[in-house]
Length: 75
Length: 259
View 1 (cartoon, rainbow over the protein chains, first blue to last red):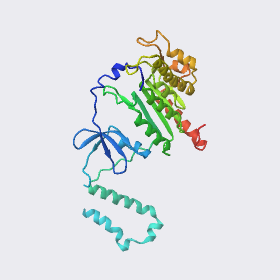
View 2: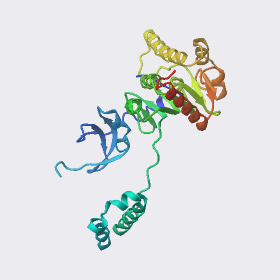
View 3: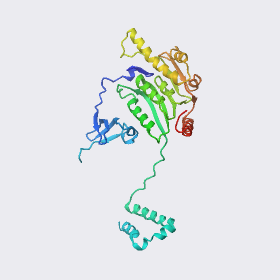
């Protein structure tokens, strides 16, 4: 990986060693997968969407940064 | 509840269900129905929902901060992640409601692979694309800025053109220099293919000394970028949107094919 930026690399990578975000994979009922960063037991922040359907990426509900709520299956 | 049931039962009354008045004067019945519906909504206490804004036929993409590639950058970086951008571009390209794309840039550069991937993606779209550089479109932001069909730069916006630097992640052997040179050539060839700047001009800007305080390279501001042939025109949002609309209309006239 090569960084081509006007920001000095030491500033970009500062704190890289201590940056370990915990991600969880969540499968949606429509077949899409989401990478989620849990905020609490019942809530998470969408980090990335993985879906075979292109239109899912324009769905504002699935936009990265949005919050989603976990719910037990079958309820 | 009583009122609603009453108004609902009225049309069911066989005396009032004669078809002739409805056909003879259909406009008479409509206001009554509307009124009844309005009343029932008021009775149920439902809030009126404002009609949604008309859907835009333009897909807007903003590329800000660092362009993040294969490594998740620490949180002090504001990043645009290429894995978010690419599928959105696919979705916009295949969505029939979207007719044009506006790409707004204010980026400090970032990952070479990710930046070139976004630039190639924008360049290969079949729908009209317009880029607008606001603030800055530096380093790997340059190929993204020139990737569109027509590019604008704000009068005060700048673009820094400089060589790709060695970082601590690369070993210092002669082969490394060759490798970096190859990486640089990818950027140079993309920019010269998608704008009217020549390879010599671009490389001259890249290796100028005395312009930048801690680096070699050039800071190109607004109209200078246009003079050099890097960007098509100086302008802002209004003019960029008007241009995109006219490109969309032209494409419609050609039966959906860009010229």
